[in-house]
Image (cartoon, rainbow, N blue to C red; front, side):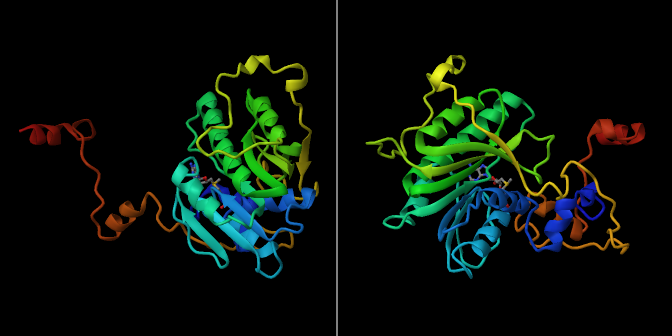
Length: 303
Ligand code: SAM
């Protein structure tokens, strides 16, 4: 999202920079909280799939009053430090990462677990939905180890074909499950958020990290009758707030001119870092392929 990119017309992207959030996603959590009061009474929280860290920023500012809350943030990627946030770099689907998270809450459980995890989308919808569901289930598995009774779990969900199965799974553990779509989440995206309140595992349930929560032998087409859970769908965020699918003019409503605001936290180890370093040294050159060369050069090259 560079200076000249069209994205500066995305009002939430612009607002995030102006308000010091590391990513536009901050507004999704803020709008979810407006509707569900997620942070009420919360002092200990886990932010899964947290980089670049805008949800952790929101959590550290909102919970426990004046930053006395305790937030653990986890991501595959390194994240720039944030005051009051303990960071773990790791894969939430891996046992070692899950154990590391859990040990921080032993004897003192969390009130809230959030997960905004998204896989690198391939464009193959079934694959993307499956990967997303795996992240959600990994997050749920961690939540069953760290949440206090009555605690809350919020996770990004793709509203795909088999989403009902995930709702059913979530309903096993929470007394209230619904699907929410904040105004800042684009309508064009199948993304939504499962908001699960009232952690109440079945009697005798023993959390077990080694067992995936989803029963893979389940026939997705058999979900009917009492097993077919239809969860309420709620849109949230003030209806007068900006529409994330619209592009807004760059000049502001008060007539002032658009002024570029740099990102709050530039990426700390972006994949293009090596190319930038080489470019600065003037050593960034494309490797020549014969088909890219003029005929005379190809002749020379092949000699
Ligand atoms: N909520 C974040 C914020 O507000 O800044 C944005 C999260 S971003 C949409 C999705 C993140 O999920 C990426 O940073 C990615 O590295 C992370 N992720 C994807 N798969 C993961 C995994 N298996 N374990 C940990 N993090 C993962």
